[in-house]
Length: 616
Image 1 (cartoon, rainbow, N blue to C red):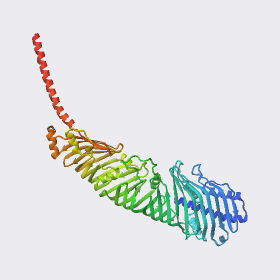
Image 2: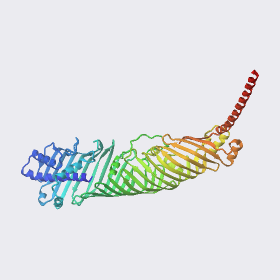
Image 3: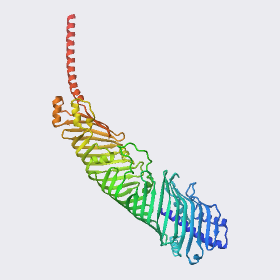
């Protein structure tokens, strides 16, 4: 960015110098073709790029020296191979006062450029065409020492004052291409106008345009007061007001207000900003200190009283499938993070993520390549406290999320209702997870979930399943009905380890203790199909046990088979007492059958023996 800014600034400065040179030449002699040839040779020598000026150079003189031309095209430098031109300008006009030149002052009347296009490309080595152009210019000037360069810059800074009545850019387009020369984004400026400009003084600026990326078109606009230092290395924009609208269906608009300051050193450009950034009209205070050189060093502090993220996430698992929307293209963030070192802090009084509310949120920010870490992320949530190390890989498609949350004394029902819109389980306890996933929404994240964890709950309940009613139905061998699933099953303790693999979530050592029974076994859920499965052993207690023992004495001391199946929306459970009884009696039937078969064999042998003896 620093090189690009310097390069553009250099073009404007070169234009002013050329106007001065043309003024001197024009007084003596003017030949349009000769001047164009000289300009072409000069640009070729400095940049190795080819300059083409299609239209004639038009000059007028006293009291202003004016020049007009058009159809200006600049090719790529020789070291950068591409058929696309680097820059094209449809029309250019500039004017400068002649008399103030004798006192060393430069009074520019107006500079107008219209129909301009700048194409930014990168080769397979990651080098941009602007870098190639600048390097070519630097190589042609390598014989000059740094002292000479500094002396030259110093002499420029000691020249008389510079003023500009107006600068007008109309219909300017900046195209950015990827490594395969495919257009990734296009920045278009409708009109930028700067009036009464002079160094060391503030000048109002305003501009509007569009930004097109990944098939989406976004409107943008900005305004503020521009201040430029005498050495053209320090810039300030006070009362900045910039906005992007229509980024995506999730992110409607981004706005930035405040004060911006930019300092251009020899190798680093320092940027400072203090103000407010708005996401979908939600204000976030921002303090930014950044250095742009080989790497981008970013130090940022973000704070907000309340921030709602609903709308930025896809639908959750319990909902019907929403209308398909194109996901937000986050590749620019990934490209930025590749050559960035980020650190910062985030503080939010109330963070709302769909139906979940996190209070007193704090997080430290850092990155490693394209992955952004929140280490640690702390918040009060679900009537308890949570702390986690989380990371997001913006280069992964879809986003790759890794979390290691530790939930203490939370209401698990609030968590399930908030993220999965499930009200089937409640309880107070702890949840420790070490999981990885990717996706743009909760449902997709569940379907890609992998890792391990542990669950510990107390004083909870299963809603929609009344196991006591199920047992009573099993005792009378009645068919199940809706009433069996209309109540709830309370428990004192529930625990299990958790294993997840691509959305298949298993509880291999599930244990539940309630006042009337204990349940032990294995359970699982498939997030891709939203199904439930489980096989358990049910041990009865108290009056319910006495009732079963009285009616089925053969079941005394035995655990009942308990099965769970169905879907997240409609879970179903059953107790197969009849199968257990059949199994019990089947064993005795088999024993009796064997006894009868043995007796029959013995009788048959006796009869055959008698027959054989008689024949003798």
